[in-house]
Structures are given as structure tokens and as C-alpha cells.
Length: 447
Image (cartoon, rainbow, N blue to C red; front, side):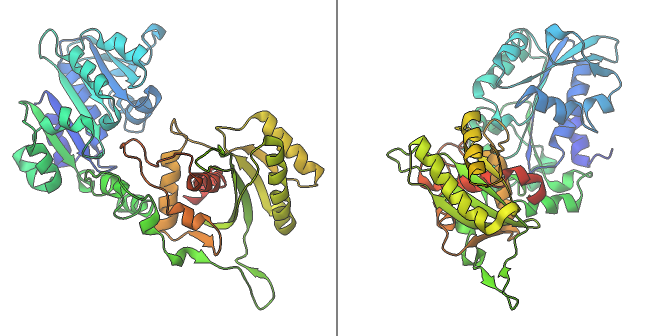
């Protein structure tokens, strides 16, 4: 493993708190976990911790990966006492046994037991996602009865209004050597808050990680939209507030296509396969409705072949309306339609079985399943990133006359930094969700 001069300086620098902020893949977490072990080795205290969005995520990203703690430090081994939950056992250079607990921010039953007593060193990965109350409790455990502690925090740049900045991050100060490489916008934010002794700020860039290849950086760029908040955070390492439209400024008429017949009277484009996504709308005063989306696929390109807004709200009538439209598409494309994927939040096994039975009665042989969703947010972030890749690489196409194209322009970000897409059961959210459900199961193929 190679380390850059900045990574070496980070590990060697004497601090009480080290803040590592910067773009994705810049080696922040790698050096933070290595410094944690050096600090645990020197600490007279027995208990220490690693915190992440969840215990499994923290374990995967910091402990058990190819350059994780278990691979780098032979004196660190998995703990076996089930009463302690996820933890590591470390034998330090003086022969003392140390315990490093691993937990998620949201699992208060786990971290309250650890932070309720004295801890010596800690690492909070993706600290911008951690609740302020949790970080408060980390300091509570670290600073008693003496200030003999170390805390590391890593994060990708978040919206500058995030509470974690004014409470903790902006109190840190950079060392003079690396001051010129910090974005000026971040310098201004640091200057607006009174600094605290022994809080050190580090800003990592892509060239600070010798293990990162140009191909890896380019792949990330291809997956994001230039100028978007996600691009500014993960590529440029700049804090940015996500406001306004989600996709509107990136879409133009070059994404619209028409179906035509070639000189052999064959319809073009010649889709290889199709899938159908169904969003079950609320049908309330906000005009939300059930929407069906038919997507076609040619290689890694996604085509919005057709979309349909249902009129029915009563379940039995709605099922018949779905069947009518699906049967119409079946008559055109037959077995090239591979599956129907229904909004997993509102769907039941009975509804899926009933839809499948009614389609069979009409000799429509298409499998029906719940839509694929990922993560605790239902896959909102994952779907957004796939959409970014499709738009940035010109691999998404909207058939002329379909509604989806205009509906995507209506999507906006929430007022809170945590709300990537505002959803008040508006009709444009139903169109977007139905379209996404038609391809989420193909994410690995098309992203």
C-alpha cells in the first residue's frame, strides 16, 4: 500500500480532533482508520469505537475490506463476545488489550452503552450523516475524566447549512502547508467560526490518494452530472446546497426520439427487451395517480417507450385498467416484455397474485414482482445516481409525445439537505417512480 505525503502527515500530526473532508475516493477513510489504531495503541484507556451509518457498513468499509484494519494490523482481531455486539480486540505495543466497538449512528441501544462510559479514541465515518446529538455523546464519552482522547471524522462535503459544520467541522484549522489547496469557499466558512485548539482540518483531493486511478475518477465523473450538488461534493470536494430542479437544467430536446420505419419496413429503434414499472399513487387531492411506464432497452441505453396515467382509484377497477394497458403493450411486443415491477411500498402479495392471474386469463404471460429498492431511503439516492449517469452519457431517451419528459422537469429538491427529491404525492413523482421501477432491477447492467 502506498501513502501520499498528506496521508503520512495526517497520521503523524498531533491533534485531539482530525477532520478529513473531501471528494470521493481521496483516501480519507483509509488514513483515518490507520491513525485510529496508532491512537488506540498510545491510549491508556481500554474502550474505543468506530461509528458509521450502520454497523455492517462501517465494518465493510473500514474493517473487512482489502486494506481494512484486519488486513493491515495482525494485532487486531474480531471480537467473539456476543454480549459486546460488533467489536474488535486489539493487543497494543505494551501488551494491553483494547476493545474497539463498532456501531451505527441510528442504533442508540448499542452506542449509548459504549458512550455512557469512558472511551479513549473514536472514528466517525461519514460524519455529515450523523445526528448532532450522537456526536455530542461521543465527546461526552471521550472527555471524561480527562481530555486524553482522539476523535477522527471523515465526510464528503455536504450542504454548508448542515448543523455538523457550525457545531464541529468549522472549528478545525488547517496546517499551513496544505492551506493553499483548500477551496476558498471552505476557507471562508472556517473563518466564520472561532477555532478550537488541537482541532485540525484536512481537505483531501483525488491526487492525495496514490491508489486512485484516472480510470476510477473518470468512471465517477461519467456517473454524475457536471455542476450538480453531487458532482461538486464527490468530484470537486466543495460544499454545495442542493436547491431547485433535480433534472430540468440537464434535459433538452436532444433526448427526444421518434419511432420510424426503415427501408425494410422495420420499426426503429429496435428494442431488445422491455419492462414495465407501476407506481401506485394515492389518488388524493394532490392529484396523485397510478402510473404505468413501459421502458425499452438496447444495450445499456434506456428508452421511455410509453407511459400511462390511470383514471381508476378503486382497486378492482384499477387492476382491470392495468390489465387493459398491459395487454395492449403485450400485443405489440409479446415475450420481449420480461417483467412487471410494482411499487414495493404499497404492494401486497395478494395484489401481485391477482394481477398475474388476471393477465394469465388474458393469455398475457409476464412475471409480476415488487419493484427493487435499495437502502433505507428506498433507493432514492441510488436511482438518482443512475439517472445522472444515463443523462450525462446520453443513454436515456424519451419518445416524442410521452409525458415523462416534462414530468421529470417538475422534480425539485427538498428544503432539507436530507430530502434529495421533494415528494408531496404530486403526479410528476408518480411518473418518475413508475419509470424508475421499470429499470431498478437492471441497475448493475445499465449504470
